[in-house]
Image (cartoon, rainbow, N blue to C red; front, side):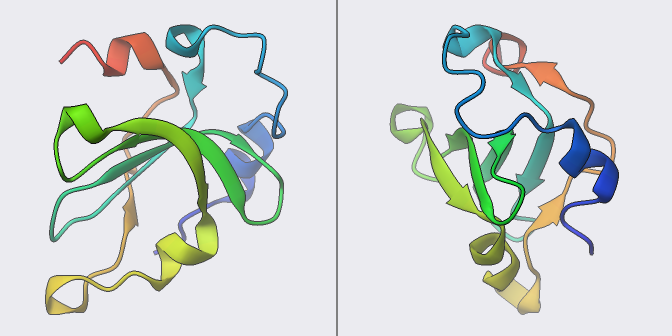
Length: 103
């Protein structure tokens, strides 16, 4: 699976450009998930090469979820159960973080 299309890449703001935006108002542009386990990564900013800034839902539970940096190359290298890799949610639409955290 292609984790990042040209269209999504173009829609992602550059790193540090949403710093003045409140966390709950930031827009998650892309969602990655582990189909064979827990863990979800929401990309909010991208450096155009490999590094995202976004919100990560921890497999350890909501108390361990956090904002931070993650890389496309690391996501692409993950192999879980049955050799499944990280996938991009094909049906995900850009969403305010506040909406994602309501659940």
